[in-house]
Image 1: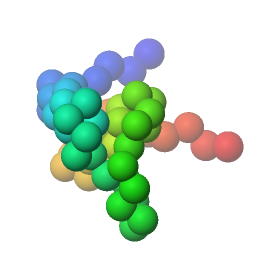
Image 2: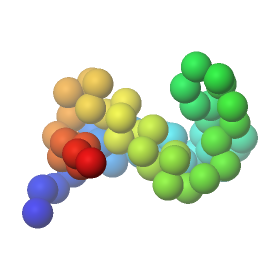
Image 3: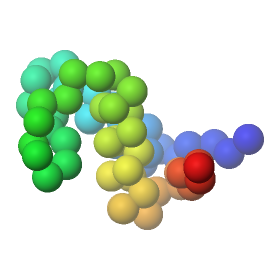
Image 4: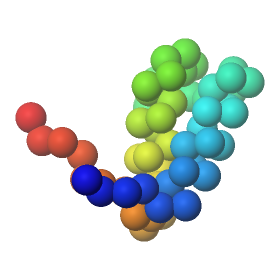
Length: 60
């Protein structure tokens, strides 16, 4: 099982704080994020873009 790096966990932590504060927005529509899972996904996605150690997305 792959482990998450420190950058990834800090990115998720930041996204969670933003969600709880009510300022986290998603995608092009800029809708407010209310889902816990969606906040985690946004945090991991941002970490991936920054080059953090994050496992690849699952393919369908």
